[in-house]
Length: 195
Image 1 (cartoon, rainbow, N blue to C red):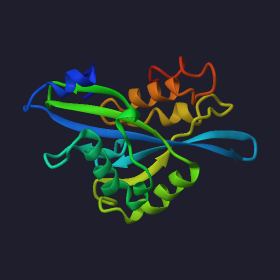
Image 2: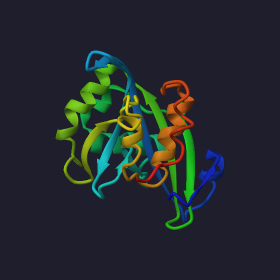
Image 3: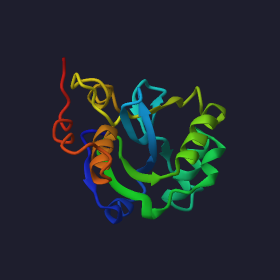
Image 4: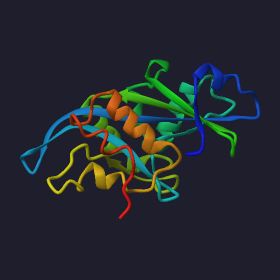
């Protein structure tokens, strides 16, 4: 879906029955931890390794029995991350953006939910018992929000991974919009470098 384009939510919802809707969520929490006792972590941001070997956000397709996009997303989160997600609910107020792709005819809706560190750690601990663990989801990963002294390690190296659809762009936009990146680091991360 990288060839897709951004659409407003109302426009996406009016596309008609020929389109499928998928919802995904970035879950994050403030993290006071320090890497090696000197590099502040600042926030824990979750992504997942998908069945296809690419990184993405938890979520999936909204089904006919789901009464709303958010109901579908919360169902998918339970399936992929386990019962710890019952401690919170992703709502319409957590909505960020939508991307429509021509082939296949799918609209991907993106949400961002701030959790407590305790809630996020419970999600991480419970994920291996989730219904889809080892199937659709191969594991959770935290996004390193720091850059090491070599200028490559940390987030720059993480961004060299393969991402599904618009997940890389969604990650970077959310990190910038929420102020989760170190000041001045966003512009150097927008375009991938290839070695």
